[in-house]
Length: 257
Image 1 (cartoon, helix red, strand yellow):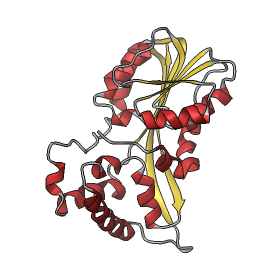
Image 2 (image 1 turned 120 degrees about the vertical axis):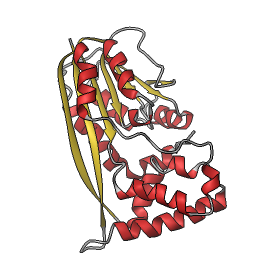
Image 3 (image 1 turned 45 degrees about the vertical axis):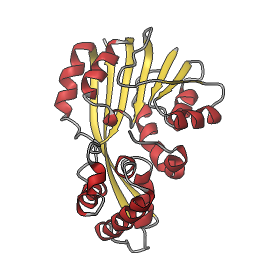
Image 4 (image 1 turned 180 degrees about the vertical axis):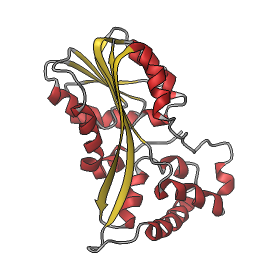
């Protein structure tokens, strides 16, 4: 299982928080009493929820002890709970279940989302954002480097490949029985970063973790050197020397019947 680093994740906090903010902007709720941030990470998305719904009982949920420690330090007055996101369900109806960039890691998450929408109060909202970037060079090169180096055997018995997201129609059909309204869209972000090394630093906080964790320290160093070399070729510098990280994301906002 990948080990998530809160410090690595927040190196690009402004860029990572932008889709979280965009998701929240599309939540059609004027007020909320109970809000749950599923996969809260270091608390950057939870902070947005607290600001949007100052009178709500906001709870952050994550499976990473390190992420939760960072979230509690950031928002000491908020309750944060460690839980298996795939199995968790609310004990009472909530007004907003909010999940920013977490369900792409949950196997068969479409069915989990349908189950969670059932637990939303009538008129409440399930709001989800997931990276849809497995076809981007950042992720294609992770597998290429893994399959072309002396570390191939280190991946035996490790499931490191994230499943491709289903088509939007799949989500619509599963959520429609419980929803009065479903909004699904893609947004492609183009993040200007300093250079190819910055792209590597970005993915080290998320998608690259499962590829690095099975390797020894020396293997990680060699893997990263080769991966960085290939990333530099895939993302050539722009006029000012920076590079653009293209990042597609899928958004779903479903209102409970």
